[in-house]
Image 1 (tube, protein in one colour):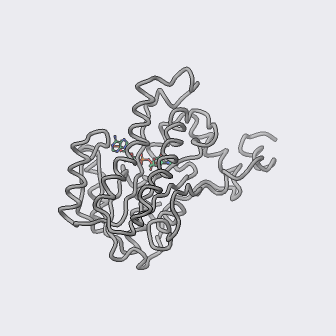
Image 2 (cartoon, helix red, strand yellow):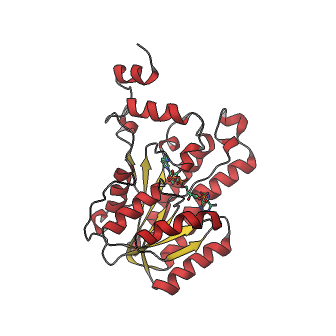
Image 3 (cartoon, helix red, strand yellow):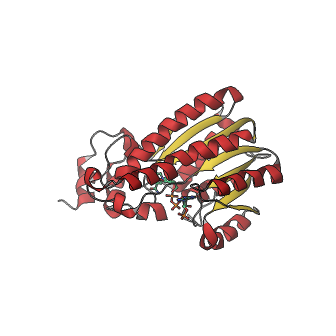
Length: 277
Ligand code: NAP
C-alpha cells in the first residue's frame, strides 16, 4: 500500500475530522487517512501510548497533520481530553473515522461457546462496539450540521467465520449501533455508516486464528477472485464521508470483492485455494 497513489481532488476541501485507529502504515485507518488527505481534508489522529506515538507521529506529519491525541477508548479521561482538544483547536469537526477493535487472542481461536469468557466478552464489546457509540456522541457535540461518521466492520457479524468468535458478536452490536446512531443523529444531518471490509493484512487481522487460510479462501471464493484492496475501502470511506454520500445513512456497505454475495464458490478456484486437484 505504501507506494499506491490515492486519487487527488477537492472532495474533502474545508473539512476537518478525527481518525481513530492508526497503529502503523498497514492500518485500514491509514489508507482512509491518506485518501481523505489527498482530497483536501485536515486530519487529527488518536494513538494509544508512547510506543504507538512513535509510529503514528511520522505518518501524521507526512500528510501535514499535527494534532495527535493520546486516547484509550476504555478510559473516559482520555476520551474527554481528545474531544476537548479538537474543540479547542478547531471549534467544530465534520467527520469521524472509527477503526478500532480488540479481543484477547484466547477469545479468537477454537470453540466460541467454550472459549468466550465473561471478561473477554465485555472487553470485546466495550472496545469494539461501545467505543463507536461513545466517540460518536462526543463527535456529534462538536460537529457542523451535515457531518458524517464511519466505522469498520466484518462479515463475521452476519455469518459464522471460524475463530472470529466473540468479535463477530461485537461487530453485530457495532452494526446495530450504527443504525441506531444514524436514526438519532439524522435530524441534525449527521450521517452514520459502516464499511464491512474483506480480510486485509494488518496487526488486528494477525490476531485471528487461521489467518492464512482465510486470505486464500476469500481470494478463491469472492466474485472478483482477489483479496480486498485497502484502496477500495478508502474509496468507500471517501464516498461516505464526503458530500458524495448525501442521503446515505444507517448502511453497512460491503467492500470485500463480492465475497458476502456468493452462496457457493466457483469449483475450480476453490480447489486451487485448497490445493485439491
Ligand atoms: P490495526 O491496524 O491493528 O488497527 C486497530 C486499531 O485499534 C489499532 O490502532 C489499535 O491500537 C486500536 N485499538 C485497540 N484497542 C484500543 C483501545 N482500547 N483504545 C484505542 N484504540 C484501540 O487493524 P485494522 O485491521 O486496520 O483494524 C481497523 C478496524 O477494521 C477494526 O475495527 C477491525 O475490526 C476492522 N476490520 C479489519 C479487517 C481486516 O481484515 N484487517 C476487516 C474488516 C474490518 P493498538 O495497536 O494500540 O492496540
